Each structure stands twice: as structure tokens, then as C-alpha cells.
Length: 397
Image 1: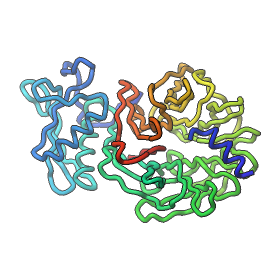
Image 2: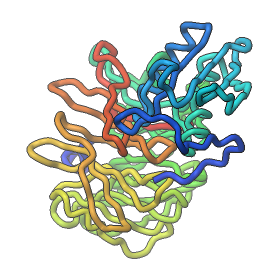
Image 3: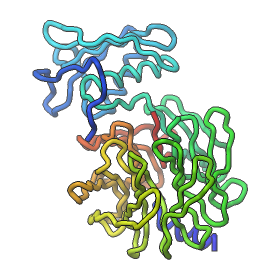
Image 4: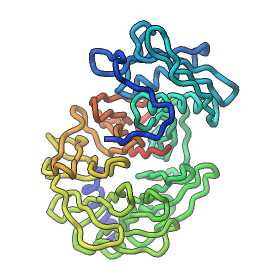
């Protein structure tokens, strides 16, 4: 039964923002933008490494274009101020007027630089910055898959597991110190473990008979949603943060998987093949009747990701033209639209601003993590192919 359910599940699962609170908000009226509607910014630093890092960050965003000082809306200067701090100044206008000055600290110099860039985003766009966040993902090198972590610039990548077994679905805890993932380690079947990122200690969360997959923390970190098949087919369950006191939310003969929490933690969206092929359903996190979401864009919809800022928006993977693309469902208008095109794209994961997504791109026989600006549709590769395969990203700040 476990093997049959595993095969079915592998087929079944292919695989905007409010103003930030910021006391030094810079007004955008009458400031120069480039022809594409992006904010033109100039980056300056006496430290070439700092300058290059900031340029890479703003070039990733999609709302900015890095240019020279003469036609920039903002002049951004970032100077080292010790081993783990920088002095940030932001100015604009002709003649130059200083708009913002702040000493920004971080865990090290790189983190301080990226946090400074995030402050610029908050001040100029009035949305949250995301540059100083971290990714967890499945990395495959020399044929071996493990869970890795990295910064958004992919300059600091390190493995978190050494299971030497199939691993899937890493999901950060809100504290950024722990993550859930599914591993075939020891048992040879999928079980959910909690990983302490600093110590490497693994704690079993769900090792029940059958398939244990899709573990995801609630926004407050007090609960875990997961898909368990111990009763014969995969159903959505919710436990406490230790994997105890499980409550079964769905009861039917179909397969349910990939739960994702609403921003307030009161609802879950998940995938079910009750209609015959996978579609998206919503249910209260305390149980009750489920409701199918009228995505109306594809006969195969899976891997939902609830926007952390706007609870009307859910990104998901949908089948189209023999492959997969990322789509966006808007509950307010009850409509969906495509966000990606070209090479197959799947496994969307939102960043903290509710504007950007990290997703997996399949091209030929390789997989790569990409960043998508959902407003401008700008797509950027987060790493070079030489790294190896990367997929199933999760983000935390």
C-alpha cells in the first residue's frame, strides 16, 4: 500500500504589498525614473566588494535600474563601518539633498550591506526588502541530493544534511533556525524531520506508516500542516509544533497534498485530485468543509503558495502545453493569470514582500532556481548552472 501510494503521489505532486512602517520614507514625487518605469539608482562605495554586492542586489529586484549619478533618482552610498556594519546614505535631486543616513548592522559585513539595501527598498518603494533573507532548497551535486541553504546572491552556499538519500520539500520555521523537510533516510520511505540549522540535529516529526510529506509551519510557528497517508490515502493533517496532537482535516478517497497557510494562519490551501486531476482547495485550519478554488486556467493545478502579504493571491503550478508554468489566482476577482512562460517552471515560493517569487525552472535535464518579479515579469537566475541542480526553494528573513 505504501509503495502504491508513493507512486500515485509522485505523479500527483509535480513535485500588492502594504506600506512598511518606516520613519524616514522618501517621497517619490517628481523624481527621475527611466523609460521602463523603474527607479534609476546610483551605487557608490570606497569598497569595491560592497559596491558590487549592492549592484547585484538592486539589479535583481525589478523595480530598479542601476545607472550613473547624473541621471539617477537616488544616489546610494554604502561605506564599511566595522566588521559587521555599514554607513548608509541616500540622497536625491540637483543639487544633491541627503534624504537618509543610517548605520546598519548585520551578522557580518555582507549581511549588513544587504540589510542596508533592504532599508533603501523600504524608504523608496514603501515595501519590504528581501535581499538579506535566506533560502533553503534541494541541491543535487554529483548525483546526490541534500538540503542546502544560501543567501539570495548565492555567494554563501552550504549543505545542511548528509542523508545521502532522497530529500524533498524544505520549509523554514518562522524563527529561521529550524526547517522541516521530507527524507527517505533510514526507512526508505518519506518521513518528515525537523532540522536545527545550527547544530544539524534532526528530530522526527512524522514517521507514521505510509507517506509523510509536505510539512509546513503556520505563520506563528505553533502548528504544522502536513499530508499523511496512514489511513490508506493522503489526507491533510495539522499538528502542534512538535508533530504531536494530530488533527485530520480532510476525509475522502482522493489524494491531498502540498498544504500552504494563509497569512493569518486561519486557512489552508492544498492540492486534491478529487475532480479526477489535481486542483486547489481551501479549508479552515480547524477543519470543516473544503471549497474548490475556481482557478479556471488548467486541468492540472498543484503546489499552491499563499501570498504572505495579500491573502487574495495564491501562486501555484499549472500544466500547460506539455509542461508546467507558474500561475497566480486572485480570490477577489476569482481569476487566474500566467506569471511565467518558456521553459517549465514550478514550485513557487513567495518572498517577504509579496511581490517576488523564487521558483524552479526545468530546462532540458537540469533544474535551476529563478527569481520572478510578479509586477514587471523580470526573471533572474539565482545561480550558475555549474552549481548543479537546485529546486524546491523556501525563503525566510
